[in-house]
Amino acid sequence: MMNRRAISIVILAGLIFLHTGCRKKAYIATPDNKNTPAVSLIMTDLDSAYALGEGIELRMRLIVDSPKPVEIMFPSSCPAEFVVFREGEPIWNSLEGMACLQVINRVTFDPSDTTEYSTLWNCTTNSWKGVTLGRYSVQGILLSTPPLKTEVQTFHLVD
Image 1 (tube, rainbow, N blue to C red):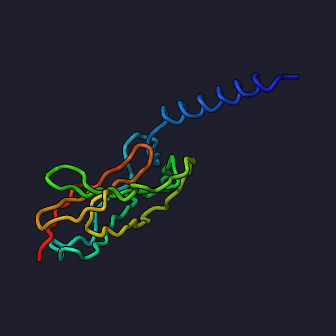
Image 2: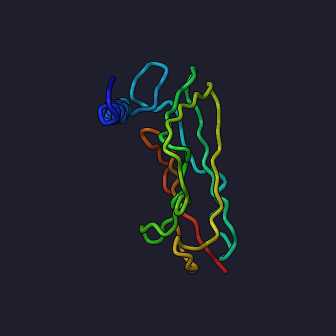
């Protein structure tokens, strides 16, 4: 019978194998098994200007661009994040202070499916400092393996 240390080593080796195995297969599966995404990710409903202090709902939409189902692997319980930038520097991240369970989740999307991810930005930095008037940008990130990013979108905070 194996002792506890040997069992622990076997379990650890198995976890390392699973972790590295998942990394080697890290792509969004497409119907023809190529390593090219069969989905589009876009920011939606973003206005060009918002009143300073107004809560801003940030949204992105995943659109399946495939005639067949597409499986996407998520390595944690947090499927998406949004990052707000000022002058190219990140000032706010929707996942700051959040706990994401590290659990592999495979989601199958049907052809022509759309899924929306959203969060509310309260016009503060991650250190809870207020922001000023001016130009900002935002990017949505699907935390899949590999991650998918939207194009950076620009907006202004005004009086």
